[in-house]
Image (cartoon, rainbow, N blue to C red; front, side):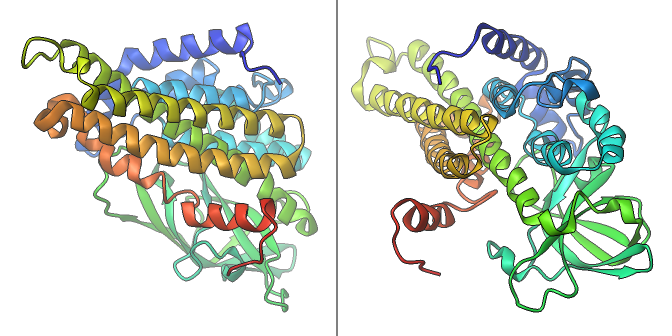
Length: 385
């Protein structure tokens, strides 16, 4: 592992940053406040191949790894043009299908992931399960050669922009109470599948939904991979999710910090720019240190995952997500404080980041559950829950 990214990765970052600046944070905020979406940015990023850098070349992708996709996610967020669904569609769904899908599923879905024409949501969280995935009650039962899927999900991102949802269910004959997940690709226009938007106080063009599955009839080939290997398939997607969430958070923190630094260099109240005062400079310097540390752990997690070490990648991905969530919250807070009252004025674009950055401590896995993971699996302490 090198601490210096390859020239190809650095060139990718520059090109993606140039694309993001073409749209900018104002474009994202305008879409969010008007109830719209960032469809134009998504489509152009897809057409340029940036959304499919991790899809195998034989299916039209770039043939890279999750580290390449994370770089794309970070650089878009770093210029204020973030795409939340990158954390889900190309990272979780495309990864699971590429690793475990049937040849037919790969041919059907991966080319669309590669060019961004396919968008897929991911549904695991349930109203009564929360972080306890062993309590998932969404159930699949066989009906001849087909499946019937019944249950509900909550806080599922971007369903209204997706052609399908990768749903985590369990088989009806799981009698032990332990999770035996099965993964299904469910078209969003399937009979019996409905969804309802959850109103949020976050300013974002990417919306959250509750899902309701009422005996949704699915063909046999809607089941992803092997029914018995579904647990491995699930974790194959959750590690990339954490890596991408960390990259998303680091990028957001970089965006806020850049705005704060520029303001601190140019804003003059007494005889010199406010950035000359340690009360302003030190929190920004601390934010830079914490963001860089989080980025390094994210890159380590991506490297381990791309090297095929899923166990080590899981530990690093959780640590990266924790570090990035903490770093972005402090970076945004420091940026707002640097701007004073202007920090919450719409003109400066920082107020919308306060709630958005806070969410990174909660989703896709809470900081408390990460601490539980590290305590149990890294430190070897007794399980606390």
